[in-house]
Amino acid sequence: MERLLGAVQELSLARDLQTVMAIVRTVARELTGADGATFVLRDDDKSYYADEDAIAPLWKGRRFPMETCISGWAMLQRQHVAIEDIYADPRVPADAYRPTFVKSLAVVPIRRTAPIGAIGNYWATSHRATEEEIMLLQALADSTSIAMENVELVTGLEARVRTRTAQLEAANRDLEAFSYSVSHDLRAPLRSIDGFSRLLVEDLEGKLDDQARGHVDRITAATTRMADLIDDMLALAKVSRGALHEEAVDLSALARAVVAEQRAYAPERQVDVHVQDDMAAHGDPSLLRAVFDNLLGNAFKFTARRADARIDVGSSDVDGEIVYFVRDNGAGFDMGSADKLFTPFQRLHAADDFPGTGVGLATVQRIVHRHGGTIWPESKLGEGTTFSFTLRRRR
Image (tube, rainbow, N blue to C red; front, side, top):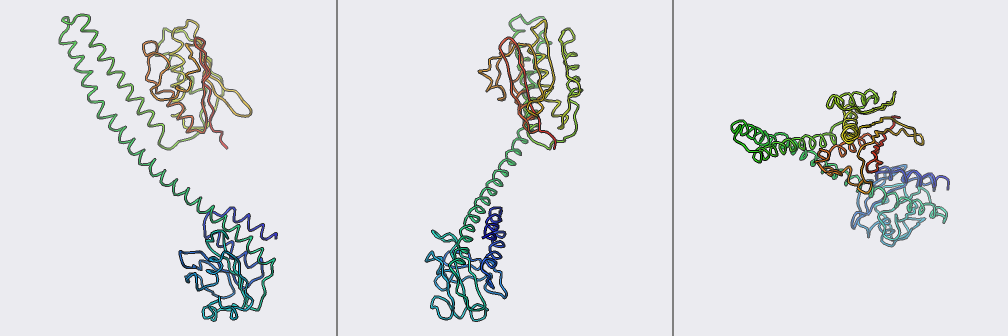
């Protein structure tokens, strides 16, 4: 019984049929002290002797009609069979056994309700299989049926994973082709629109009234916005593919570099920025830089209308996990719309109030997810926003 329990555990871990058969052929002999054991699979109307463990060769690799062999009988009748003298039982094809050592046998079906195979035990001397031996063999066969079903399930899942992976690879190739088209085919007409608009203004200098000049300004503004959308779409696509180049990253230094750039963009602004010292992580430096580019860029943008603008960058230990955050006291937003926040091209503020394409936070989320982390917002309209995120901890 201990050996049977051990076999059940081994079978539960088996992930392919060869492993299942290797376990069963050995354990079947050990459970009954048999001189040989066979693992038989049902192959339509034939019994296929797929594997064996015996003192001399039996029938490994051969197929017999179900109606003419004893393993077929056990599967067709859905019950075990034990024969002390094989030459005295009409169900046994004696000629097939004469070249072998077999004198007695016992066969049990694998899955009694709808047999998919059988386990056969064989003895070189006369042996009457006991009820306990039959019980042990049938228990092994029942566990084998579950293991085979698990193998079939795993095999099916692996096939679906391979199919899905191939589909994703094809989709990524299509995305790369689309990105190439976007970066080249769409930029050319944009440059033409922008360039000829500027030439029009120069050629008609002093001849355009305010309304006409306003139309031209809208055209050039639209081309600029379209170019920004293209850049953001490409950036979003880029962070979703390619290998991560992970290393130790000084997040404090990285955040301060981004803050310095933001101050350079608007040197007239007075923003109180505090960056915590000694923040570190393990990840892709360029991608983590993009996280702070977007989060701090938003923080500077949405505090633009506050004279007392303040931005804090830091981290805290929450139940043993490091949580990083970027907090501002800017415009904030209604948390009822937070579900749209990380969707590309979704914006919670009018473009006239705060410019942008609505792609930055989607990019941030993808980068954080690629680093095994999560990101979430906390905000209140008119009082500011905090973006918190985690990263996978290096083992």
